[in-house]
Length: 499
Image (cartoon, rainbow, N blue to C red):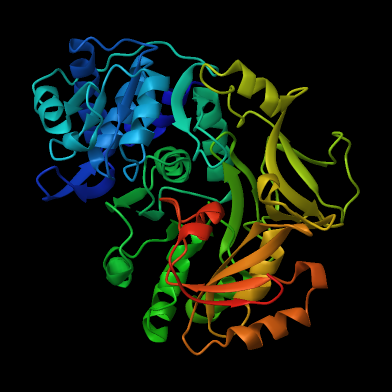
């Protein structure tokens, strides 16, 4: 079955069913059925064809969350156009790289945002395109697509060099959506509060697709706003919420009585895109009455591993491989390591991308005998639960010892007054590298006392040689900490030991 065939369970099979609450281009509230979404996307498909876009062409969008992204996505899936989502936090240099690499037919953005694009980029205003689409036919047009037909080029965050475009196919999105819808028991009775950006696979491949396949109702917000989040939960009464750790940290500010009432109406909270500290998970359970379901995915592979819907959701772990996905943990030579031993995670399954766009070198480096080398280091317990220990590129080698930052970060996050922590390696003349901790913490936290406390719970080579108090940690749009940028952020106070 094609990806469009899966969508048709809702677009055609539930045409009269309320599907979406969002805002129009003018900011007015908008309520749409699945049938209305079918017609809107058909009109957009005709408008794109009238502008000359054909199957196989790339079409980029640079937009915050809005219903028009859904229209564009559906229109492109129907006509074989390859979607290139662009992070709205990106600026000229980053956008120029993506446009140069993907060579899209055009970049679609709002008239107000067109000035943010690099000079010379062909851009279309969303307002003009939408006005043209409104005059087009609502009759569906399609181009036959199969499982290996490219559906999107989604660019990596580029933390280890220029970002690469992962070629995600119709089959990748279909396999991921089927696995999530079944594993997390999505039905048409669910109500999904969508706050994740649709330019990212977390919001696009996961959230948007479980909505389309299950036929549930979705409330699409432009972005997460922690000041309004409790009001949204009370007014919309969602049954499901997908978020990133920083969102769950913010939700801990909700008053206990309100939080308990929200938790009583919600059946599932899912966290991903960055590690969820165990103390946050426990605090959320106490306040909302829910154990957050943590899972693990990547731009290149979509979902790989998830804590179970039924059974223990173990803090600090990401659970078990998803249906149809196989995970190995291997040493530097590619040999499987025993349970309890750290190694790199290799993944294989229909969720894994078709390689990197026009980068045969990067594709060859990322795959070994059909296995995708994630670059993530983890360990599997005897009962199968997988724990991530960090990126292989984040590994700190100090005096010949391997140090994984996440282990130290988890311990620091458990200390009273410490809200967030990031540990990075800093060059050292004697040991090669030493760990340094950057902390977002209360003013009452004594860094000297914290250093002594950590020293009692970690091997000496793992104890950070410096503790730096900062106002905030640098993050990506999805809340993932950018460790390597910590060294250049302004600090409020530094405590150095041997560093």
